[in-house]
Length: 490
Ligand code: ZN
Image 1 (cartoon, rainbow, N blue to C red):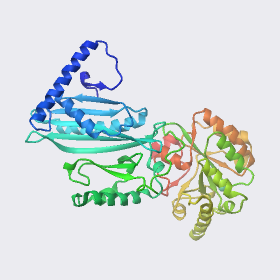
Image 2 (cartoon, helix red, strand yellow):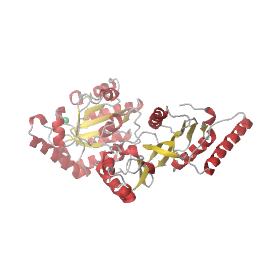
Image 3 (cartoon, rainbow, N blue to C red):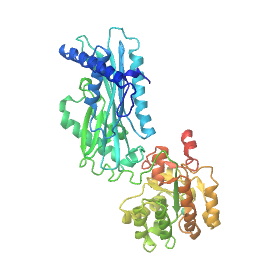
Image 4 (cartoon, rainbow, N blue to C red):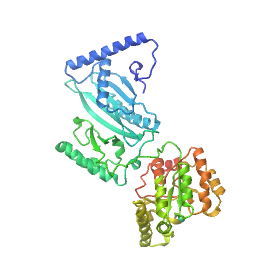
């Protein structure tokens, strides 16, 4: 929203032509602000009563909220009115998506303020304020906590707090890509954070807590929207009136790096995936293959690319040097997933037999990688919600079938890839055990790069492209991975 231009101050970036006149106006503004402020202070009141004193009052608010200011420059806007005044201080960020998220939040709160107080009496006084604090973490992220505050004048002439809300956004310090929960947290983080926060606030605020504070914390499903990562750990924000009395305002709870041990990933988005750029997930089934594995990994490494491997349990257990192969894949950021133990048609098996296919593969993979995979691909694509349940994993099919097992020809494989209208959001099926499939990487990977695609793992694709949490079992069938189109269908 554009406001009275005179009061739009853009920090550190502006050329003034009539410097003398400008300085004169400044002096007037400062005098007005200081004057108004002094008067307000003299009367011992927390309020404002003119354009100038409102600006001073708002600046005071901005600086109270502000901390660390890792994001640098900001844009302040002031719009004094009777009865309603608005002041905002917004960070200048390079990421359009993050800027939009913060602006949308502030605008929606501002609209609510304007509609709530639009019909107020002329002699009443209502103020809307937006300010922020921003932090840098030691994990290549930046975070902004955006505050919106509504105040209303009471009988004694002081501004009372009506509401105070906070929305947090964390993003990649390098490319501005938003950090989604799945990229920041380890599996099972929700329960752990809930417990730590519940204990912390009990310790800090004791009997001042509202009776329902536990369920409030437990129901806060998306913690990254209320949390900013810092160098020391994280700050968690609670809206005014959520767990404490409204008059206490929004509150911040600090979590240390020790608190976050086992919750926050050691590295957040280490490959700097940009959620705003096109991305494709290459998947390899039926491995690890004894002959082709290293060649494929070499190609991936050469082009700084990754793939998701749906490995057969019996190969993981029996192929020579499978442990070294899997570890190499993980070292370059690839994802290891399950493709069952012996490649049966799961639809012909009993539940107990399916469970054996899963459990033996999990054990073989865990022995090497130290963890149980969160994804599986049913052989022949024959899976559903029922097999998901037994595997206790998300079932992943594909949306680009290269037919590599059939053509056994690297040019034919490449042609299938190139003939797609778009690869953004798609999952490409290949088989790591065939030589031509391995050879096709030297054609496909440089071409993808040239076309501006990032290669991502299936879990990354689900998180970044589709906003899903891959660790929650769900069946992703043939119709799923079609980028923006499938997103709209949901
Ligand atoms: Zn297969």
